[in-house]
Amino acid sequence: MSAVADFDVSDFDQKNDAKGCYVRFYTHAVMDKKASNAEGRPIFVDQEWIEIIAPGNQNNIVRRGVRPRDRHVYGEQYRRFKAGLEEQVVGTPLTEVPWITRSQVEELHYKKVRTLEQLAELSDTACSSSAGLYGMKQKAQAWVQKSKEAAPFTAMQAEIDEMRKKLALLEGGKKTRKADDEASAV
Image (cartoon, rainbow, N blue to C red; front, side):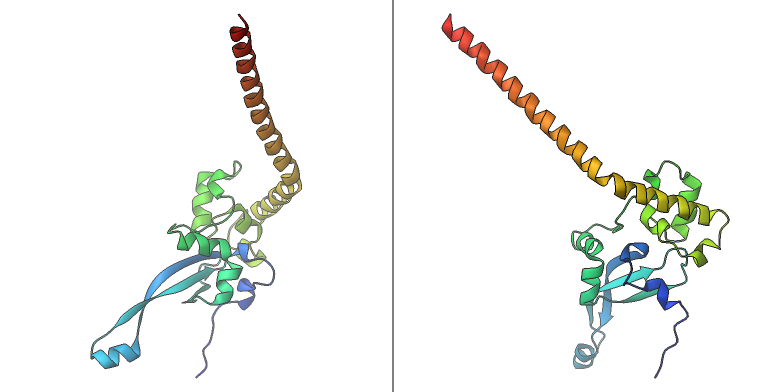
């Protein structure tokens, strides 16, 4: 028996970048036929399942049991699922992007686009469904690219801030010891 898929398989192409898809792991009760036949009543077992949605195309939804490759490709979402976190989105939430309005965030959420990275990876086909979405995608791509370019400097600044905190603690301890030495000398 063959099955017909009414979605574009390339929307879920994992060779390029898994960040572009909305991914959710969840527990699903599946009937255990062998145990059900033995007991004479329906017996269900919990299994890990995955839901994959191509952003911008909420009709292309894959729901199936988790495969070992899923745990690797969507590793961060899987770790969040195992930690008990309901929302397993990884990336910059659209609510944290200053140039995206609240109404645009809601519209993108309807299209299953939750992060700036998902917006940047949106297919051109999905962008054609809403006016202005292609421009937002281009802006998101530029934003992500600038962030990647600035990452070494951001990390360096964090390291400098940490060193300044340590230096301030050391200087504070040095002043305390100096005051103690002066007090004991008197």
